Image 1 (tube, rainbow, N blue to C red):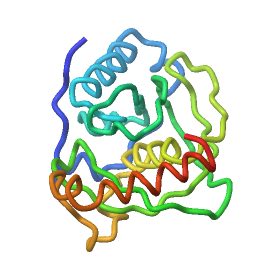
Image 2: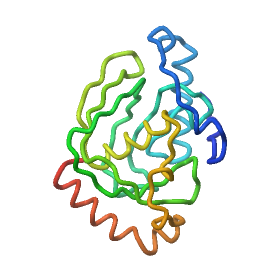
Image 3: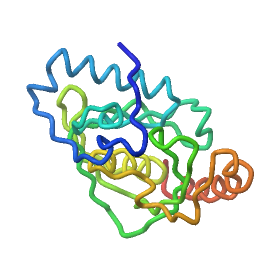
Image 4: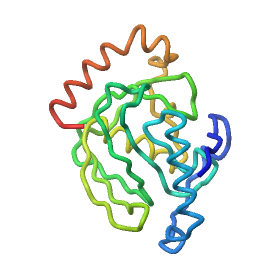
Length: 190
């Protein structure tokens, strides 16, 4: 396993649309080793998720996990999940305001409107089907990561008037945001 370099905003790879992965590719030792690298890189950077395109591999794979994350102590746990060729479909029109950051956009946060509930259809790292509905902050995280696979970064969807550095978010916005999302989680789940 290896920790990979994370592409930063402005690098053209982040604007590419990632290609789908075949079952044969997914089963290869090379691809399985890449997935291990993706997870290790996400853990090293204290990310809640990381898309393959963020480590210069424009393929439709992302890793998501939240467990004792110092950057996101308010996020409910999400077990390690690998999404291969994910497709997200909103379940309702209801949206929430999610204050997001990104490992590819260091020290910047902003408010993005995300669907409260989405259906996720994908494969896991072994090619087994995933078909579930996720809600709340988990749904927001899935939407953020799959956006990367379509060449989108959270700043494309954020209200620019809400941009803040991490320090200013902590000082002026975090308490109100945590209160809002705590209510959301209580109402719809993670």
